[in-house]
Length: 179
Image 1: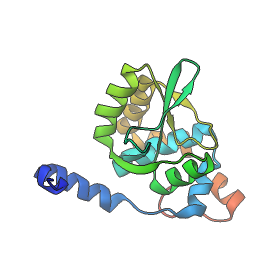
Image 2: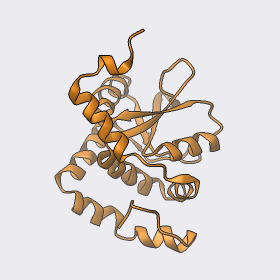
Image 3: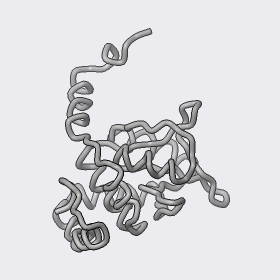
Image 4: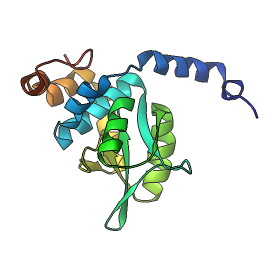
């Protein structure tokens, strides 16, 4: 069996190391505070974190395929911005799965474009208690483009009162996430 590092090129290894450097554990208290946010807030938070950290987290079934849920005649695939949030959300939903990081470029090129679009699926970013703002792939691409075009305008638009939400109810401000 070939080791994964032997199959990666120099740039892919550098990208992997950068993602690992950007990754940090946020802990259960901070993860719970994120999951308490509104569906819309969690959606925009996930976009911000995914771009800044260059990865999302997915939940996989024992056979390795992504976990998805049916809503009517459509399938919904969930993704989270951090490992701790994904683990807590899956635990709360009582979904047995394996949590894995996914590079942002792979998520965009492979999972969103190929799987979700080909199946006319929806995406749930950071679902909590089975609730999330469901988006089409094109809507996800549009919001990602908005963030990449002007990150500060995106933050001003979607996070102007975050410090109030996170500190009023919990008595603390998460480390390093929101201004």
